[in-house]
Length: 162
Image (spheres, rainbow, N blue to C red):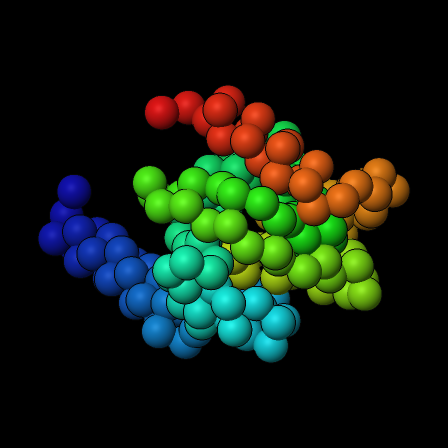
C-alpha cells in the first residue's frame, strides 16, 4: 500500500471515530424516547437509569439483555404497558415496588422510550434490533396485570444466558 493510500485510509478511520464520538457527545440516540423517559421514569429510575435503592431497580443491564431475546422484548413492552409490582432481584438487591402502567401513551412513544433505555442507558450492541410500535401493539392486545408481568420477568431472567 502506498503512503498516500495509507494516509487516506487513516483519514477515513479518524473521520469515522470523530463521527461516533460526536454522536455520543451530542446526546442520546433516541431523543424522543429520552424525553418520555425523563418526564415519566426518571423520578424513580433516575435520569441515568441507575435506579433508586429500595425503590426502583437500575435499568443499566437487563434491558439490553432482554432486547436480545423474543420473550425479553415482550417483557420490556409488557412492563411499560402494565407496570409491575412485587419483589424482584437486580444485582443481588431486592426491589419491592409498584411501577405504574403507561397504557395512556401510544405505541410509538413507548417503543421510543424503550429504545432509549435499551440503547442509550443499557448500551445494547448495535446488532440488537430496535423495538417497534408493532412490538408494543402486540402486547397491548394481551392485557395483563403487574403481578403477571413480574412472573413473566422471572421466567425471562431464568432463561438469560450467563
